[in-house]
Length: 291
Image (cartoon, rainbow, N blue to C red; front, side):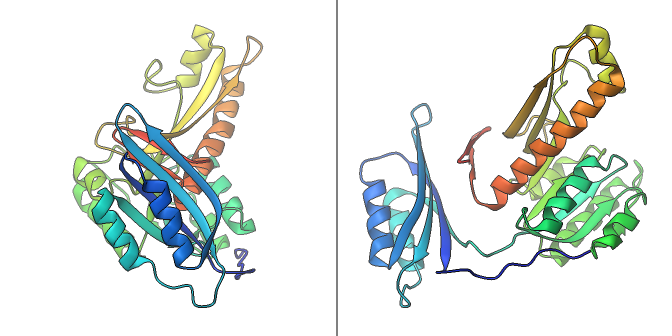
C-alpha cells in the first residue's frame, strides 16, 4: 500500500513561524517584509501572551511573482531587531516521522491510514518496536520495520540504536504511538521538541495496570486522552492536545477502554498534524497552538 503523493497545485506557498518578546511594530515589520518580497498573506494568526510578555505568530503566504526571492537576509535582520526566533517552511515539504510502538496498535493504525490517504502530510520511512507484532503492518505500507528489544541491561544500547535510526532516516519528528517504555533523560533531552507522546487521561488518578478497570470502579463520568511533547518528566511535557468524551454507568471496563482508544487516536493525530504544519509553539512548559 502506497501513500497519496500530491504535487504543487497553484503558486508556491510557505509558512513563517516566529516568536519574540512583545513590542510595538512586529506585525507591521513582518507583513511589510513579506510584501516587499512578493508574498501574499493567505492566513495569519497571532497571540500575545500577557503573562510571559511573549508574542507568537504564524503566517501562511503564497508567491505572487516569479521573482519572489529568499527571505533569509531580511528576517535575519528582523530577528536581530526584535530578538526573534523564526523559521521558514515550504508548505509542500513533508516532514519525516519515526514511529515507535509496542503492542497496542490502534494509534499506529490510525496514523498509517491518515498517511496512506494523504490527510497526514508526512513521510514515514521507518517504524521501531520492542516487539514484532506490527512488522507485517509496516511491510504492507512499504515502511521499514526495526525490531529493537529492550531490557534493563540493554536500555542504553537500545536507545542509542533509536537515535542512530533517527539520524539515518533524517527524522524530523519521533512519535510514540503507545510505546510502553520509560525513556531516559539522555534520549528525551536529545529529542527535545521533536518527540510527541500519547497517554490516557486517567493519569494521575489511575496509575499502573488496568486503569480503565480502576476508572470503572470509581464511576468516572468522562474519559480523556493527552498528546504532549516528551520531556524527562514522565507524562508531564507541554500539552499539545486533549480530547475528552462523556461516559456513563452503563459502560463496562471494556467499553471505557474502547472509548479511550478512539480518543487517543484523535488526540495523537491532531498533535502530529499541528506540529508538522508548524502550528505549535513551545511557551515554557505550555504550548501555543494555532489550529
